[in-house]
Image 1 (tube, rainbow, N blue to C red):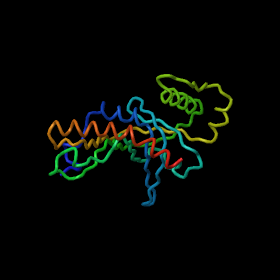
Image 2: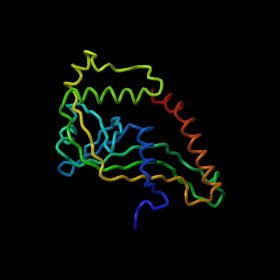
Image 3: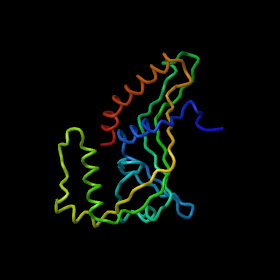
Image 4: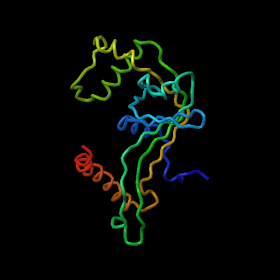
Length: 196
């Protein structure tokens, strides 16, 4: 038996790539001696691979070399769905979009390739306005590259977990979709006001 149920899984790679592009902050998980190492950092998708860089002082950096196994999670929007949206007989639930990937990580050793990956990532994250363009020849890049390790992850397994009230009728699904959109727009400011 698969979990979550098939109705809540999405195997369309195009959908999963869209989640990665719109929510590029990833949770990268490595295991060493039965201990998980977890880092949150942006990754960009390029031709079946995820590309990023990590502080060399991060203990997980050593685990992202030499074809080591990693799990990566991208988190899309999520929200609580009240029974008030679905009718009195429904129970509360939580809707979410997640992408789980497995792959093997290798170190990018060429400094120019690391610098180029940073330029590419900045360009991707600045799109579409590109208010800031990172210059490959910026002298700060030569200093910065000494403190980071570049890596790429070859994706070997894709899994989309899209729990979006698919087990309900179309009208309820549409209401849940609107709730997901509304909540994610309206909750961010009050949250930020509390934590900053």
